[in-house]
Length: 421
Image (cartoon, rainbow, N blue to C red; front, side):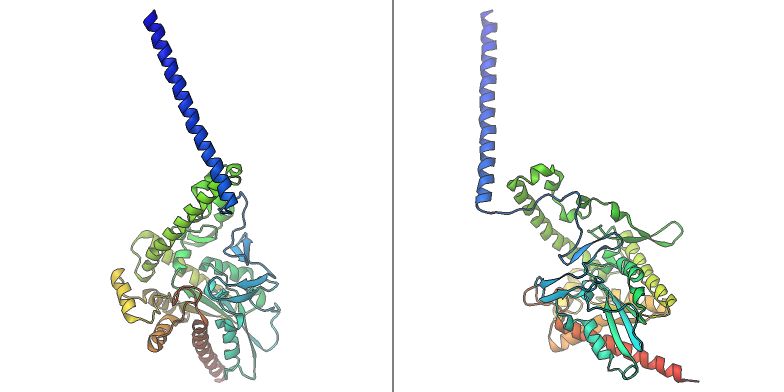
């Protein structure tokens, strides 16, 4: 009996000691959390709050969510932009980064609509430096229109737009302005990726897919996506925790910031690897489908333009590496990534145009010839990465010259044909 009592006493003592130790550990942890919370707040170290259940999906403060397009420019918004390049951004009352335009086309006016992404929206440079603004002034001096017509170029470009979003923009807004010419500015660097839900990271956008009948149809399922499910690269594991916990804990908010900063760095590396596949024939089913959808979207845009009795022009905007001024750097890039032809996507689109009967203006090769000859950069800004990113003033100027030359020649030929008996 004495032995049994002794054993019970020893067990109770061990449990008591274990409880005391656990209490001390938990108390220390709690004290550490409290001290850390207070310390972070006193030091004014900020983190990120939890993603709310309802959130506006927009790439910048100049944009807002849209149920058809994913996002759009906010009508009437204005402000300074100094992220990459510098400009004063003014969005007109119809949600276009442009001056005000009447929807009714003025008499004796040649009206051109430009569709595209951030290269076309072009918040990186002042409006007067954009290619579409310069194009308007240059084309006005073309012999085919000078003294006969006024020229009006309207910018429908929006940052991050895919060709699917360009098609919806065409249907939703462009036809209200009755353009004579529609230009689709195609960015080699990511347009094919943007058109594929398997390749694109940001799923809060409309996609087009081929149905069982082989018809290209819209997929608007993004409308039902919760903010936390829109882009895995922009969500932290912290966002999966209860909102009241995250939004009241500076520690969790800082952890979220650290986690997302790591994801951002990884995203840059992953996208760089992914984007090299733009310059090769499809190597898997995802890329095969992405190109099939991309070509289908371009043809669909062309068909709708023709149905409206307007002219269509596809313009290719080169990836910065394609127009890199250093020939050896381009060769090293191709060797490292096993690329045979740096202009593969441009040539593929030219073949599509030849097959489907629409003009393609390849800016990429002409840009490369210029940057290499004069050792200049058409991309990049002093406050960002040199020779990378979006067009600087030179890039926009070169584009305006080449597009103007193409349109002017076509207008002259049309004029000659009309004069023939």
